[in-house]
Length: 156
Image (cartoon, rainbow, N blue to C red; front, side):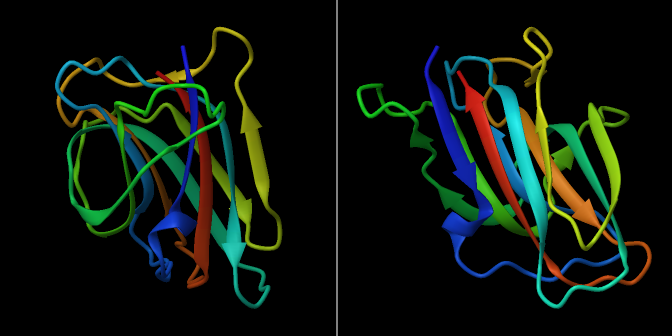
């Protein structure tokens, strides 16, 4: 399996967060692609520090929304190009599978966070299906409006 990286900073301007979940990064399959496994996730806010709460969620996705397409970068330059598609900084949400949250964390805006999977505990996409994948979304129910950066390492 080859390893790749994708970040919403690859897609230009990062929008402000609101009280509803906004997808920052999604990695989805294309026809005949392999399953996607996220094993490392780093995220935090940019902007003036404040005492606001932020909530982060990784869920399974079955359809793309309106976003910027980016090319995932291979961690080993000798590996083939990635089959999966990276999409970032969503303007309109895709279709998230109901009750499919596989990672959820509430945080304070003043800190960045990193999650690394224990071996065998990677976050796995729903299957090798067109547009099926995982999405990382953020929201602030307490009124925070800072942008959120997200960096995902995954294998396929």
